[in-house]
Length: 298
Length: 105
Image 1 (cartoon, each protein chain N blue to C red):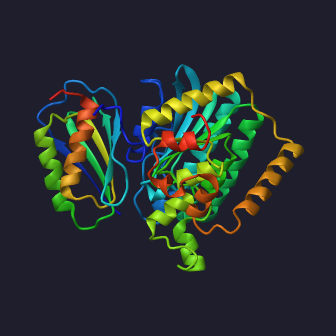
Image 2: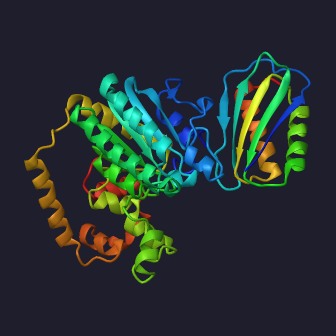
Image 3: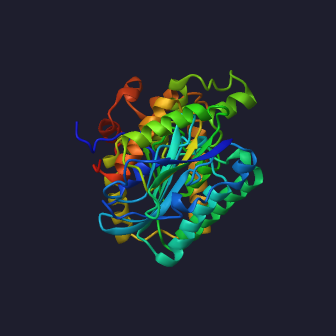
């Protein structure tokens, strides 16, 4: 097997990032040697990570300059604390002066780091504002979701703000995570231990089918890389549409229509029935077949 | 957290330090290791931060063993541990050394 065929899901954040960008092009901001660790976790006397669970920096992608962040899902579920959030916000702020071709967010996060309470919540709201600022400056922001934590909570919101959302089937996207829904509403509402159900409802295929993800790719780092290149080049020639009241109202109308269409659906299967001719085949479908049947070109 | 620092004599400095490097992730049963070069010193220094209390003797055995097996003089290791087993610690140290110092043995 070729050394390049590395699963995005199984790789660490650092491996994903390095595998995605051009070889030897990455310059890290606030690298581990600077020891920008979380003061909140230190007070709680629990383990710190030297990068606070996120890697940020500049690189090139097929020669295009980009800024990029990668969250490490295995460090407290990729959760956003004060320093973690500040690193991504700083990166987005730098985009306003550096004007890269795109900003890539390799999201792998359950949302706010609850150990840091309000500091984490504020970090998320700052991230939301920063993404909107970068987009208002005409620079596209892409979310790439294929890690084991998916994109939930505040990072689910940040992901949906992005101009493009690239997912693998293994990636997940949502607001409240499965365990949260089960805890609050009971197991009858959502059984978080039913992994197949969790993926049918929050996984990449469903999110692509309902249009929340704009691209579905194989769980391979090179697959994420080639789509990221394609998207970066697409936005080079086609500038970002500006957001105005009319476009927002149009979007809202689409969402109302979608809600009405799928209102009774309790499971991803019921959505497959609406979208695909052979719904039972969807889980086993290859990404290429899935995209073909959905009538999209990757 | 239990914290301690060791300065271990090592056979010799590595032939060439390519770059400082980080290896591993801080997650349950795992650890991260940052390796930095300290050309002014010929000892190998190791700063350990671990969530598991009371295992210093075992840590020292694993770290001594590492310093014996590799020319790690002049290198500084910062370790953030979330309860890795001795075998995992040993493996990560080897990985970190290999990434940092290439094939230099």
